[in-house]
Image 1 (cartoon, rainbow, N blue to C red):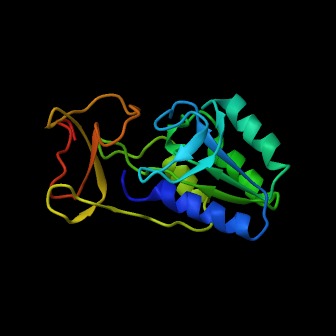
Image 2 (cartoon, one colour; image 1 turned 90 degrees about the vertical axis):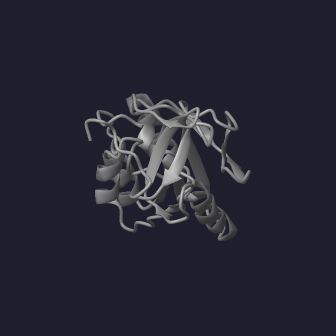
Length: 180
């Protein structure tokens, strides 16, 4: 988190709009931070988005809407469960001649692969791997630490939150789960 993934996604989509391309941006309904109808960055940049459920039905909506546009974007793709065929569907959309941009968090707060992130990365043509700055030492942050009241906490893989719940950390400052 806090590496600029969503900012980069919006920049790429804005670039496509400048080129006259028709775009459709999707966000998972589980992510209602900042706005229920827009994708909004931590810095306040935003674009209108179609909110879809993180189910097979949501993927069907994406596939149907993609036929009307040149480019699609998907924010926070890690929230789709593994059993939902999002990676395969997005690859199919790309093979149909559309450009597909996806922002995804590759690891969860426990340092494990996040949902379908690895399959999304395996099916991607280009990967822009972004890092944040560690809040403890200023180093390159490759991990997201879940915290509550200043203490590291672990729990379910999906808990939607922002800086009130998560911190970017480097490998040296990251606290692994007790069983990790």
